[in-house]
Image (cartoon, rainbow, N blue to C red; front, side, top):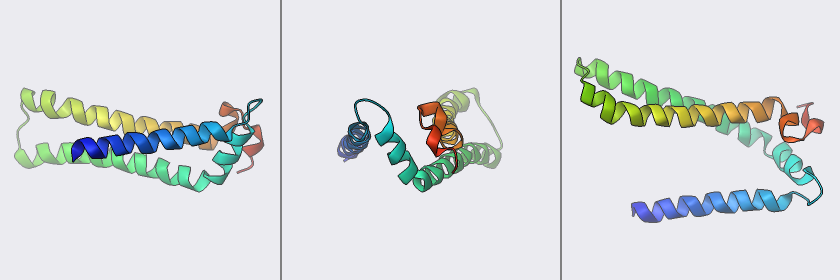
Length: 115
């Protein structure tokens, strides 16, 4: 079942990325700008969820260690690295979405600056 869900996720991501790429005209970024302007609310929601997810990952990590009362080196190596990577990915997604929402001229859409 895990393999099926993983393949389904990759297929959905590929469809979204290819759809966004096909929306852009060959000579410029007009289609991407239109797509971003229409999905502005969704990008804001995704940004918020990414930051909240990153906070929950760190909170879960800290609460597990507070509840047990001990921190062993093996815990840090086994659990800590994966949680830090998950936190970094979610936080990075949030930062990229913040940059795109805050300054759309970075991706070639200066007409969207009046959001």
